[in-house]
Amino acid sequence: MIDNCDIIVSNPPYIQKEELETLDQEIRTYEPENSLTDYGDGTVFYEKILSLTEEGLNCKFIFLELSGTQSERIINLTNRFSFTKINIYPDLNKINRVLEIKI
Image 1 (cartoon, rainbow, N blue to C red):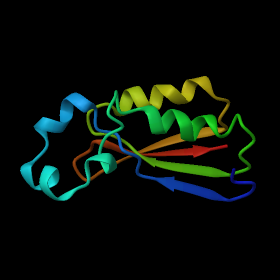
Image 2: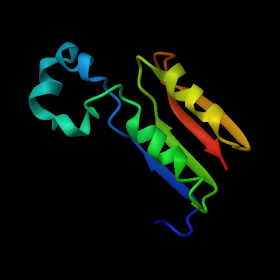
Image 3: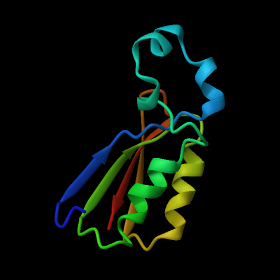
C-alpha cells in the first residue's frame, strides 16, 4: 500500500475485450495485449485505483488517461467516491482524454 504521495499518474489498460480486434494492426502486433485490456469491460483498473482512496491512500491528486470510447463511463465511476474536485482534459481531437481528481 502506498502510504503517502502527492500524485498518482496512470494509463491503465482500458480497451474492452470486444474492442481488441478493432485496433490498428500496428497496435495489436507491437503492444503487449495485457497493457491494452483488462480482458473485461475496460474499467477494472480504474475501479481499483479509485478504491485505493477508500482504503487509506494518502494522496493529493490522481491523473488517469481515459478511453476514447468509454470516457463517460469511467468518469461516472468517480461518483461513488468523495473527491474534492474533478477536471477533464480533452486531447487535440477534442476527445476527453485525461481525468484529474483532487482528493
